[in-house]
Image 1 (cartoon, rainbow, N blue to C red):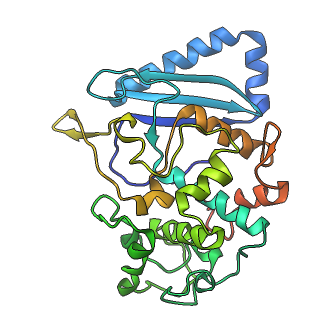
Image 2 (image 1 turned 45 degrees about the vertical axis):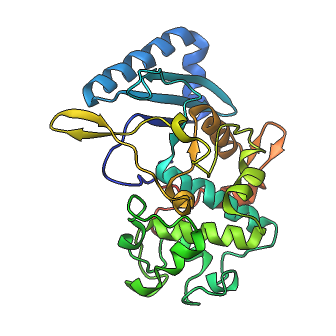
Length: 303
């Protein structure tokens, strides 16, 4: 499963997560795990050099185990090394976590997939868009409406969404796939309304704490300078490039996490909603988050 990228411009270092079927690693690790680790190390370093990547964190998840977890290179211009606990913006991988939270609310009976958004957000500008439309990017909301996270400075989630009503829809809901991050920011507001808590607090209690994701937050102000520096290309150079993203964009693209924490999330994804003794979702609900809701090939944050 591969998450959609938040933007075409690359900002580096980055966090790389790989899901492999248990059988893929079982045969190799049983014979010579150290040789496999050296092979992965060499591959990563070659690719970093070829792509000009200053640093990255890599986690490999197989079944309920994490056979490989390592940092490479530097996290910023100060030269501090990347570790499995270095914090990164998740980009659109954040959508998978928001979608998971929505399904928890569905399982609790607080939301249904066929609910119009206006059932939970009384001020919402149309009753034609449902929760399924948002999850599946078939709401009719344009990509343009969700592309302002690096420019928009509105911190309040509701205020930011309400300001978009003037943009209208590009088509009838349910008729066409149009990837727009605004869909998942609206879902973040639904999470707030249905849970009775601010989005970040709800995510803490329902996802991050149960999965022991201790360095993960939807409030990146609390992470501050601990977040790995992004870089932007400039005439063949890589220059440090930090953007102050608004908190209102967290549900779609700016949750902060680490490679170690995200392996916990992927263990739950690969094990029908379970992480150790914790059941994050029932098996049927977790399966639903991984299956396309239509012909788009898109499933609650995953392609």
